[in-house]
Length: 431
Image (cartoon, rainbow, N blue to C red; front, side):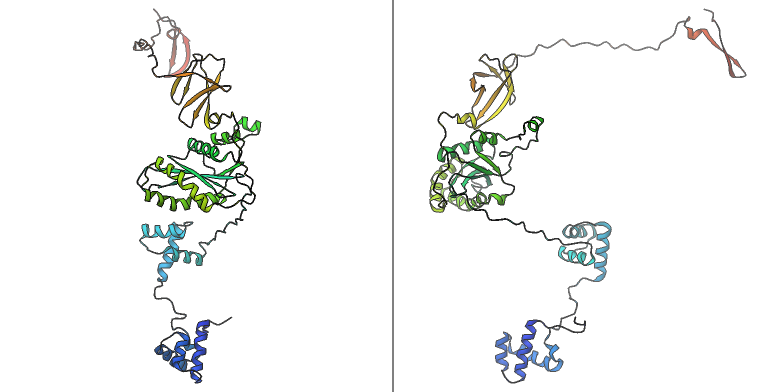
């Protein structure tokens, strides 16, 4: 190990020293040395003179081993470390630097503070290990798995209302489908999925994140624990009824294909709609009908296997009765139900105690029992309740109780001797 008085030369300085010695030996000239070292003639002469006077060590930079002129004084460092230990222990360097400037008037960069704290042992820099992610091969068949998600973005660049792109991309081919909606929720998800399966068919599986639209946030109930089931969102329930496998991604990177698609669309589609002056959701959806086929023609890939696993929608399947929000309601004795703060009268006679309310994607509402539709009407005006006569309370002043003269309490008289109670004898008072 080198002593403190020995200055080690860097490879760059060793190269300069070698060239300078070749000048001493007359092998090369100063002009050639300046070209080899990419230095000026003047600098070459300085290096030669320093090596002649100081020897090989003269080639080293003169500031080597000297403290920096920008270094903060030691008393400031000691004060900062003391304040950190007394008032800001456990603070991160960034937050501690902010508080030192805010509360103590000491301005110091968080990088410098972090270096000081590490040297003093008050902070340990921990590098977060990069999580290993293994490349996943595409699915082999068209329709084997479809990635689905909603993209929140300023799609109209301020020209129109805020909206969400409900997007679909096939994992095997990269074929894209989508539509714009006002928000990302159950009804938009069901409506977009309904349009997708009418175009391509029912896929084998759908892959999406844990948004409350796609995964229920409810905890397991006692009934779920007994039956071994788990709570489902309305969209999950609809996909299960259609026989679609549901899978949730634990991170955005897991469904990277749809995430990359959104980044592409937020660049390409936004510019295309800007050129066309599109500023409404209806105009944007009409544009997508023209744009997506051309996009798929350019960027879709050939699947590994040619078969299409999309299933046709079975004939007679009540698709509207599946892709809807179902809510169970109790039927009252007067054949009325309450739903979303409104009162409805059931017109058909039924022995059901509980019936089902279906909110369809087209905005209509259907009330059913055992897959049979029940006629109903909304009660818009409720009869006014008869007002009861107010109850009048008469407040009487409460008087203290005065015992009568023949009360036993008055019949006893204490015998007092020497100001002390010595004996208590019954004494009949005269009335």
